[in-house]
Image (cartoon, rainbow, N blue to C red; front, side):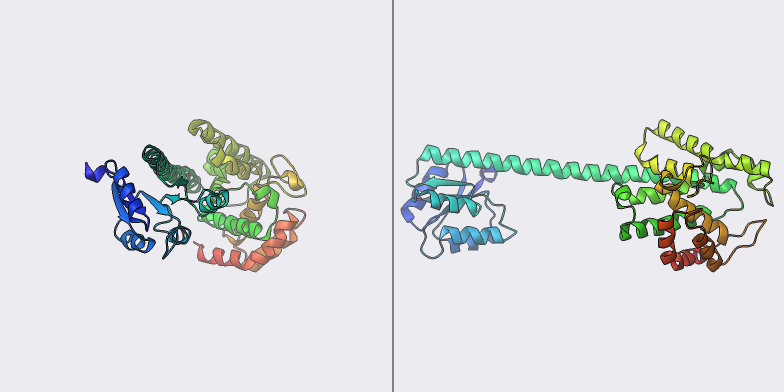
Length: 359
């Protein structure tokens, strides 16, 4: 059928060549014989060909000038061009190919050879377009799957976090605020180049979302201790401390059940190390300095700050200035010195979050 035929522009200012070219191609292709490059550009406004056969030596605009114009226009740049020429020197052929031509056909034409060149190049272009479409479809599929997976990850995190917070009546809004503090600290650290090597492979969104699970292990703590309207006894505090290994175990169970390990890695590190202290006096492992995972060192600041500015049955909320002072005083003992230096620059942002997200 005529509509199924590929469209070819045959551009040459020699009428004999145009006639010969059309006669060679007319049975297989929809051919437009065009006597000049100017005529070709006029027709391009209405018809987009699958291939252009372009003479080099034309009087008004030669083939080199014409292909430059084609390649400069985004609408036409991808149209394949075969140069037609009586030139046989290596320099001319090299120039034509360097300008973007896909082939070089010498005059006078050999009908079988010209048809074969056209067929091969059109087939190659069709394969390129098909491959491009496949790649675009795959890219879109991957994009949609990534969005779905991210939504699933966030749903898991949110569900578990909501369950934890519903158990602890004294910490309303704590998870949401600490997540925002973690975002401030993580962004601040990355923008300042602090611990660049450690964060080079981080998915920042995953780190921030993972902060929601820092107290997951509190699910295992009894209501009598978790919601005690007063300070915990030493024995009760020892039981409370078990929420850390319990949280790590809970996250490992989620990893095993879902088969998803990468997105929960940060959550596991945060849950397991946010009560460790820089000087080694924290729990549960008593590790110190940079042996504490960076995620846990960040969460330690976010968690303590929020505990200080929040009301509890056994204490009044501190002012943000008081909380800032305590965090700064913990530099090198409770907290990573480099992160405390950064916190001091972000303290006003912390105070803003504390005010906006208060309950």
